Image (cartoon, rainbow, N blue to C red):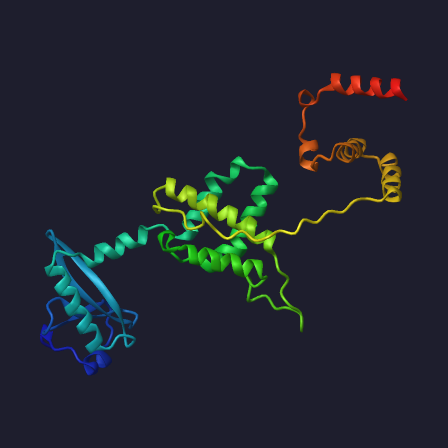
Length: 280
């Protein structure tokens, strides 16, 4: 068999694997060859030199790539090489360009440890369930404001997990609050991506914020009395005191749980109590 020949489909089809891989070089395009691996897999590549360094660019496997299509691709690559362009170097550089999965991983490792444990868990859940399935393989620089709005719209409409089967005749439940929280996470994450030199701008900066309907529920007097009796009989005295303080002050549970004595003006509290007793 000659060292160089015009590659054809018949040659590609009849080439047999041996104990070592080998190449059949084309006589039409310099460096263009068919590689036959020991496993029997066959692929097309182009060999060339850049700054004295031998390079080999893989075009694709046969028969997914026909000989004619691979040869035309090889011609294009040779023209690029003549213009001092290194196609393999560009492919390798593309591999190190950060993807959204890389950004999320760094965000979780470097930013989330600064937050409360519950906040961390909630953000990780949203990023892994709502963002990664959609954007995992996309480059950070590819995400546009339109992509952000589309994702948040699907979350707000309850259509963010199409693989999840809904009950018959049931409609997705709208989640505008969750969409807003995810938008805030994305805005912070992409702000950090700008600082980390992953992209020049923030696609989530001006995300559309959905209207949130406030849900307030006030206990009736009978419910307050039942709660008071339950707190009185509770074995967890500290927990009962936390709930009582929330009822008296309207503070959030987390604020009361992590409050310190120096944050309370006990002198003012005692003074107000004596004043109230005096007028009563």
